[in-house]
Every structure is written in structure tokens, then in C-alpha cells.
Image 1 (cartoon, rainbow, N blue to C red):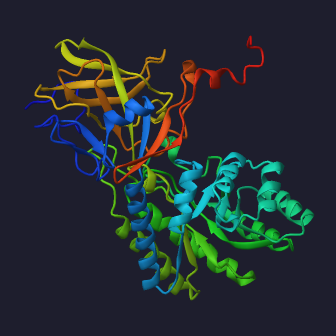
Image 2 (image 1 turned 45 degrees about the vertical axis):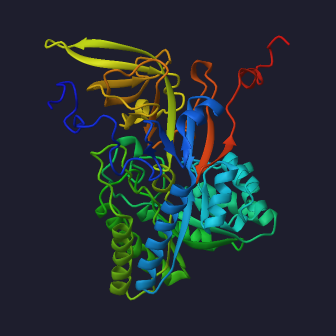
Image 3 (image 1 turned 90 degrees about the horizontal axis):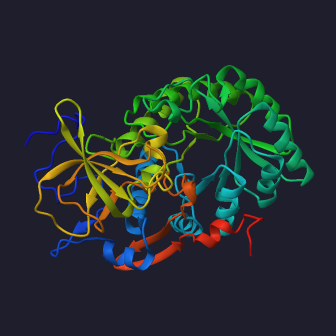
Length: 463
């Protein structure tokens, strides 16, 4: 079958429009004999009937499986080089108190980057010592609350923060462990807005400034320096950037050890996942081995001990664990270009308010018809939202059955990360609920908003 000429080169027309691209969907996501689709043993139609749509669905088993795979991969790699590893779940990808409890059960630490995220982590009941606080502009209040709660580490992002944290810790007569975020200068092959280790950007300390700032940290009796932190970006499919950043940090590690202990090194996260069949993520075992070996080999070269290695995966755990369900409202066939190729526009009951990534980054996603099986031919389609924006696109390019129609249900894959967390009330749409599914059970973990919720903060509303 030939592709529609409007289709991007990476998008292949499917032989079977009812099939699911491998490696994109949770393992429990499958089409039943009646044509309907289930996830975690629950029919998607039943989920929408009970909780409405749009609806975020998290496969708990997938979350646990992916987390355990990552924990094991880095632990095994570290043990082979006679060190240990720590995993921090990067909560900005998706956070709720229930997910905090999952993180706790898995034995992971958790990374937060605001006072609000800290409040959710604490409400979820995790030991504060397993919390790390990030952020390039942490307020006095956020720092004071973190110190008071007893968080395990605060990541320093600027010279100013050294004094702020030392002051808060001193006022409470506590010893606060800290890391220093380093801008390694490594340019990850990723979207411009997702690259977070370049010289001309808001995160981190220039490598040349690190020794003097670590000396300043060590001069404060209420601060304990744990080590350096590096994060080179997000959604990365090549290991070379991680390896190069690790090597650069080891050279700093060797210099800093002359002035005192540097027990840990945090190398961040950013491990890519598959949103479409064109995405080819690395095997996490290969990533773990390559980074750990790079650190160990460099440490051997400098004659220094291998530190405890910490990492912060978020998307790699929760991204592929989630899908979003939508109800189709309208469809229209649009003739495009001189050759009058057809693109089918499929409008759904959500949009950029529940998935901002396509509008923000031009992100691509995969979508399938899940409420029935179709015998129709595949048609090049664009799944769009109901907002008053031409850029309100959820899936820019996909093949859906030609007969997709109002009241059909669609599922978009790999929406566990940065969809709920970036959700908005644009056009006063209420934000969607989140349910967790596993082994035929369903658990509502975040309820959907109501119009009453939308009006609750409007102090001038007529009552």
C-alpha cells in the first residue's frame, strides 16, 4: 500500500489498521475477541463509561515493571564496578500521592522541583530523607520547608542558593546535605527546549566555577556536600552524551576530592522512550553499563574511588505506562495541495489542555481506534482538540480507519509523562481524571474537575 503523499517519511501505512505498533503500548493493552480493547484487564469503554473522557489511564503493573527494570539495570552495572546506585523518580513527569506510594513501595527515592511537588511527596508518606529538591529559583519559603521536613538533599543551582540554604539550615540548627548542579556543556541530541546542559541556559553552574563554589559550600558548618549533579536533557536516544558528561564530572570529582569527601555523583535522567515506531530507544541495561563503565574507567585513570551513582528517570518509567482515552466528536475530510490529497481531521473531546507537548515541542504520538474493530481502509488522519487554536493538535500524523466516526473511542499511547503534569484549563476545560489499572482492578487516583471547581477561585462569581 502506498502512503498518502502528505504523510511524513517515518509513518508507514499499516497492513492492519486494528493492530498496535510494538513497543509503544503497555503490555496489557490488547484487543479482545469482540474488537474492543482492554488495558490492565479493564475494557476501555467501561473505564470511559465510569469516569468520563478524556481520561488518563496508568497501567500500574507496567509502571512497576519498568521501574524494577531500571533499578536492576543500574544496580547490576554498579555492582560489577564495585559501587552502588540510587534511583530518584523524577516526579515532574507525573505526580500524585498514590504514585508517591508506588515509588515508596519500590524503594526508590523521589525528585521534586517546587514547593507544591514537595507537598505532594510528603503527603504521599515517603520518608523525607528519600526526597531531593531541585529548581533554579527555589524561594526562601521552599528552602525553609525542605530543611524543616528533613529532605535528603537540596540541589544547588546558583551561588545565591548556597547562602539561602545555609541560612535556613543554620536557623534550624540542622545539617543539610546538598549537591551542586553542573552545566557540563554536553549538547544532547534533543529538542532545543529540552536540552538542559548547554552553556547559555538557565540551569547549572559553569564547570570553571565549581571548585570555588564547593569551597564556599564546605565553609558552612550547616551544609554537607554530597557531590555533583548533571542533567544533559530529555528524550535522548544516544548514550554518547551521557558518557561524555560523566567523564567531565569525574575530572571535577578528582579535583574536589583534594578538599574533602565527594561520596556521590548524580548523572540525571533523560532516557528516551518510544512515542512512534520511528523512535528507537536504547536498552536501559546498555545505558546503565555504558555510563557506569565510563565513570569507573575515568576514576581508575585518576586513581580515585568510584562514587555512589544516582540517576533520575521519570518519563522512562511512567511515560509508556500511560495512555489517554478520548471520545470522537466530529470528523471531516480536507483536500490538501495541488494533488488534492485527503487528510481526515478527527476532533476529540480534549486537546492541548490535556496534552500540551505537541504544541510545545512538535511531539509526535501514536493513536488507535479502541472501541471496535474496523474493516475499513487506513486513512491519513490528524487528531485535533476542541480548543480555539489551530495548533491544538494531539496526533499530527496517523493512520486511522477510514470509517472512524462520532462516539468512537481513541487511545493515544505513551501519555503517562508530561501530559497530566502540564494540563491546563484553557478555554475553561475541566482537567481529566486519572485512573490506575492492574489485573482487572481499577482505582481512581485523581478525580476529574467540575465546572464548580473552575469557578471556585473566582472571588467575584455570583453565588
